[in-house]
Image (cartoon, rainbow, N blue to C red; front, side):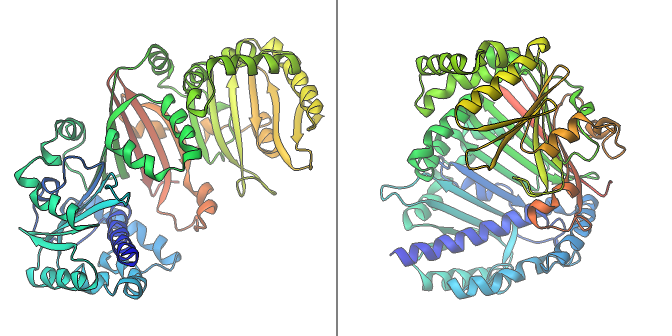
Length: 509
């Protein structure tokens, strides 16, 4: 039984992997037969927690073909077989591993019959606690599909079936039966929440993802270790109370565009204030050096702190616990971290990864947080008091011309911080702090950066910029062959709907 479940889990994960690969890179595929845009969603049970689908016909335009060609060099450098003129070659690398585990290959057993639509659904575990999943694909070659079903049923428990113009493959017979019955009863296509979410996304979608948050919470509860459940709850407390999330991906002349939407309950007062505080014109890019790899911009860390305080009960801390900890901190360090520091960070802030030389916590990169303080005359004294208090606790705090390097008792580096004008600057390494406080060539003036926010919708508030060549080392990639040169994200929200646009830009330096 366990071997059989493991077999189908591997097979399911592999087919889902094919979908993900197609979403991320395969932007040119032969025009196939067997298209039915509604067939797959109608076979997803109404209680599906996560649903993902790819529509290969929407990968046939000139933008998709340009994107496929751009990815060719990147895959060649990674020694992954891929030919933009015949993108199915990307799947050949999975054949040997899949054959040794399951006796099924992609190139011979899946691709010859699969049509233009493929989807995957993930449901909350059944009574036995085992994960439930459902895979579906339209059929363009009936004989090949029939042979595939017979082959996989001969290996396992009979969890694959030909149904209408689809092949359905499920984690267990009960889930498979639910998928077959779904068109005649309640299915995901009939769900009002699904319809409301998809209505907010573009019609032409190469890839679609939908998440029902209530069902996903049940699914997540079985996947997250008990000792980490509080962390998840605390993070969720910072966000709106989402009821559903949708995502759409497609190719454009710029590269790859991803549209995200979240339906949520009305924002509370602090969340509304946080939203209203964000600006459409970044200002913190003048603080960062031109070679910044990753830049997250925003305003009002004081409001973010208020949201965090309200969600700390997920970690087992009550409001009384937070007040007690604040009082202890004040006694040890000489200032109140809540009222004297965090509540005063009501201006712009930036989080950044900056390329530096030497040994770093993140290979080749130094993390830096900058935040504007509304009482800068107090900052120098607070910085010195913090160093004194840390020394009392057994840490080593060295003052290098106003830049404090803090180390653990064993000598390992912990954090670096300083005061620069009205700004609090905290980093993981001295090199990152120095890059910020001494820069004469800011990111805002860099040719590769100027105008990048204009690629977003006019209503989007700038949130994130990435120079992918500077991040290539994190993923062992060659920056010279990376097709995606920049990434930029913006958001816009109202009291009930949050939206985000991610642009993965190809071919611009």
